[in-house]
Amino acid sequence: MSSTNPHSDGNLALIKYGKDKNNGKDDVTVPPGALSIIWGNDQRYWKNPDSAVAELIQVCWLEVTGSIKLRPEMKGKKYEVGFEVSLTPDAFGWSNSPVYIMGKRGKKPIWTKMNLANNNKGIFKIPETPLVVAPPGDGSDNDKVYFGLYEVWSGRWKGGLKIHKAFVREFSGNSNHKTGSESPNKISS
Image (tube, rainbow, N blue to C red; front, side, top):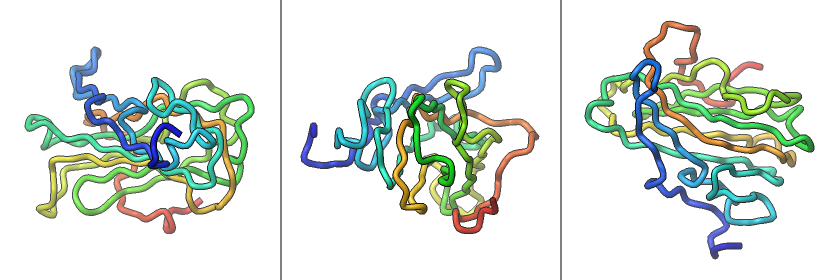
């Protein structure tokens, strides 16, 4: 292990703020080294959590979280949160263990889930349908966007997931997107 703490804490200095080249909208990239990964410092469970790609060897508790601080000009906008991931050829444990993706701005998180099993399309975005966080209307903290990737409920071992990055992108579309504030226990299959 590279430290006495088995969990890796994200280095927020690695977060890259920018604009999408095509539409000029806010586009924030959060590399694996800027994410907090439970068991991330334990080489039995994760490979290279501080590099360009964090590779899950095996865990039964998947918890990867992050946050960004919004710049003043970003505060009144909606943002899509998600991850770009891939599966190794020998990935296992995903068939009955959907992952949950969380976004939060203010007090109430929103959740969606996605099944990763049999996904061999290289690097792909999760969730497939945008998970959009809006400015809170409850007077709570509008300075940060929080996000996470979880599979902690099945108790099954899983491995072979590669996390390439997390992202927070300005959202202005009217597409079918998740805006509810459901907990993982209330999301239907």
